Structures are given as C-alpha cells and as structure tokens.
Amino acid sequence: MKKKVLIIIGVLVLIAIGVFIFLYQKSSSKMISPLTQTEQNQEGKLLVWEDPAGFKFSYPQEIKINPHEEDEKNYAHLELTSVSHPGSILIWVKDTTYKEIADWVKKENSPSTSSGQAGSTQVFDSELGGNPAKKIAFNNPQRMVTATLDGNAIVLVEVYLQDTRWNQTYNQILESFEFIPLQGEEVSTPAKVSGSSGQTIEGGIIDEGEEIVE
Image (cartoon, rainbow, N blue to C red; front, top):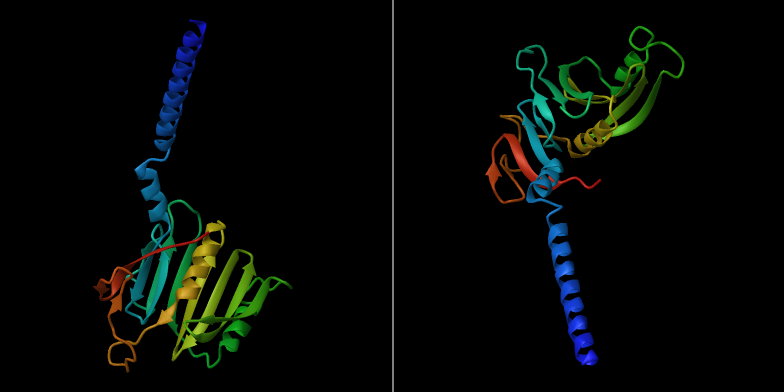
C-alpha cells in the first residue's frame, strides 16, 4: 500500500514540475514583445539621400535631414539632426577658387580662421566619394570637417561631436558618399537605383533595408 502511495506522489510531483516548466517558458517568451523587436530593427535601418547637387550617401533612419531650401547661395546645405542625440552634421557644396585641397587646409589653419593656438587642429589625409580629401579635427569647439574638391566646388562634411553617436553616423556618411552625374553630364551607370528589395527608385530618399552592426 505504501509503495502505491509513493508512486502516486512521485507522479504528481513530476506533473507539477512539468506544469511549472511550461508556465515559466511561456512567461519568458512574453518578455520580448514583437513591438520591441520591430523598434530595434528600425533603429538600425539605413536610408539613402540623393541630392540634386550631384551626390548621395546612406544614413540611419532615425536621423532627420533639413535641406535648407531657403539657401540660394550654395549648391547644397544639408543639416542632419537627431531627437535622441545632441549635435549635428552639416554637408555643404559651395563655389570655390581653391585649386588644391591643400589650399583649403592652409586657410582653415590660419589664425584668422581657427583659434590660432598651437595644437588646436589636426590634419589627416582622407577620401570622399573617390576623390582625395583632407580631414581636419578642431578642438574648440570640438568638430571635424572632411573636404574635397569637385570641379569648381568644394564639398564639406562637418560634424559637431556633442554625442559619441555622431561618430558612427559620420563614418557611415563618409564611407557611403558617392558623386553622381548631373543632368547633361556623361552617365556611366544607370540613373535609377535599385534597393535591396529589388524596387527601383528615382531620386529622393531610398530605403536601403540594411542594418548597422554595432
């Protein structure tokens, strides 16, 4: 009799353990909601900005771009900002009389332009859109500018490093930056751009469907 009672108790204990494990796994699966997963995926998505001034680049979806259409002096004047991170990135395309990018570096390092203090700037060789470029890091205020020449224009990509998040965004823009032919120029590649989903988009903002790996 005692043996039957022990067997029944053992079976009940096993059933109780099984129910406990089932309920625990079910509650754990609810800890990550579909909404949270979607938000994480969207945060890493890249979009492409194609500018009428003849260039394009990719940037995180969370970034907002103001094209400053009221600026009639410069070919391009983009301001990239984020609600979540202080700081900004400015992209300019301006007329210039510089014959070499070294002339721009010399002007930026002059006392009348920079702070004029020893060690206030650092200059690095760089590349932008396949063109030789120079990158200058300023200490006061803390910002970095990458510049290259494109015909009679100078292209400037400037970041104000008030938040470390902008380092990643800045590098993403520099690495993806491309010059594209303007209307009437010789075109070596199709004017249309195909996204990763196979959808062809002309101009404007293009959804790349990529993710940033941090």
